[in-house]
Length: 102
Image 1: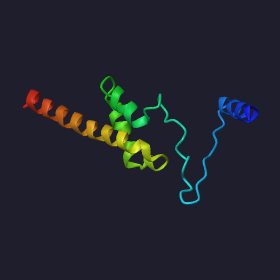
Image 2 (image 1 turned 135 degrees about the horizontal axis):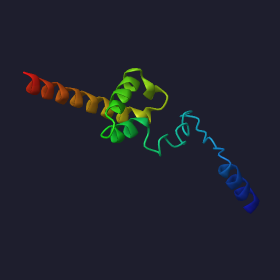
Image 3 (image 1 turned 90 degrees about the vertical axis):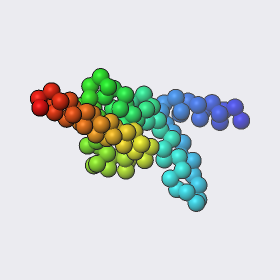
Image 4 (image 1 turned 180 degrees about the vertical axis):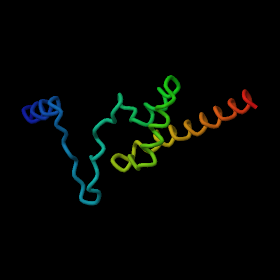
């Protein structure tokens, strides 16, 4: 019994993931791997670091409109938040430019 557990732990340490099978839902276990960018996902990473470098919001917007979230649906909310942040930032810059130059 303990040899089975220890061999599973050794394989897990190597980065091998065991796919949990289910007859009704074949995609169960498909999203067991953690998201990129420290587990946040690309969208939330772009949203957070967009306050330092706003072009990341536009990068998230491009990924959102090119359906990047089809690879992993967990990315959709972060990418949408980045797109909304880009929209708000663009409107704020346009208003600032109109106030300054008009």
